[in-house]
Image 1: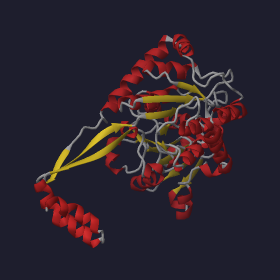
Image 2: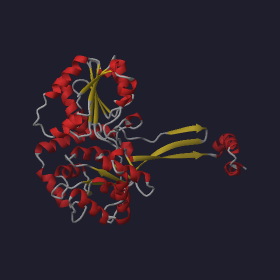
Image 3: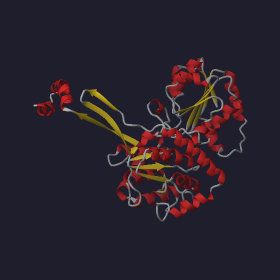
Image 4: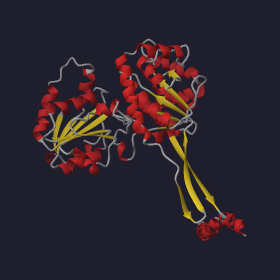
Length: 428
C-alpha cells in the first residue's frame, strides 16, 4: 500500500486520490444496451441465450421450484440459522424506525395539505453470487421491502456451476418469507426484471448490488421509459479508515483486507495524522499469510489502495468528506465527537470495536450503500426506498377565497388565463 504525505503532494495529486480505480466507463456500453434490448424484444429466449453464454446454465424453468427452496432450508447448519435469526431481528428493528406516518398542515384557514405513503407494488431484488454468495444481501433488500408492504417481491440470483441458485441464498429468502425466486443473473436478470418476459414479471423498481455489467444494465434500463427505476448505481466496495495513534496497525490492516477481498476493484484508504501508524500498517500488510482465501483478489485490490498522512485532524476530515466513502471507519479516540463533522459517507463505524463486518451482516443498518463518491448526494437503502408519497390538499370555499389573490397574481404573471379562470369560476 503506497503512502502519501499531504505536506509533500500537490493539490492536483490529492484530487487524483479521490478517483476510484474502476468506473462503469470501462464497460462496453453498446453490448450491454444490445443485451437489454434483446431481452426487451425477445423475452425468455434472449435471457436463455445470455444465461448460457455468460453462466453456462439454462435451467428448465427460471423460477426456482418450492421443493428446491425447502431442500435448501433443510441443509443449512443450526449455527447459520441462529445467525439468520439474530441478523433479521436487528435489521428489522433498525429499519422499522424508518416507517413514515401521515402528517397534515393547514397552510391557510380552510386549506389542508398532507402526504400519504404508498408502497411500490412490484419490486425486484438482485442478489449477486459470482465469486461468493451473498445471503446477507437477501435480508438487506428483502426486510425493508416487506416493512414497506410491497405487494409483490421477486428475487433474481445467478446459477452456480450446477445450474442452481446458491442454497444459502434460497434458505435466507425462505427464512424471511420471499419465495418468488428466479435462477438468472447478470445484466440479463436486470433486463428481465425491467421489461418482463414470459416467465419473469416486470417490476417497478430494481434493487441490489452487482458487478460493472449489472451496474451498466441498471443505468440503461432506468433511462428507458419502458424500463424500471433503480435504487442506485453501486460500484466496487470501498472503505476509508480514519485512524490516529491509538489505532492498532493489525486492526487497521484487517479492516483494509476485509474490503479488498470483495473485488479486485475494491479500494481501502487509510487517512491518519500519525506517520508511525502509516508505516506500521505498511509492515502489517506485508505479513498477510499468502494462503488466505481470495488472496489474489486481495492483492489486486490493495495494489490500488493507499494511505494518506494528513497535516491535521481537520484536513483529514476534509479529505474524508471530499472522498465520500461507502464505508467510513473512525478509529480514533473520542470517535463520536467527530460525528457532527462528517458530511459525506454511506455508513459510519465509530470506535475501535466497530468493524464494517458488523454493518455488512447484523448490527441492523443496511449494507446497500452509495459508492464512487455518490455519498455526496445519495443515502443508503432504507424502507423509504421501497415507497413513494402522494400529496393531497383539501380546500373549503373560504380557503380558496383567502388564497385566490395569490393564485390569480401568479396565473397572470405567467400568462395562463385558464389557471386564473379555474379559480374565479368557483367563487362567482
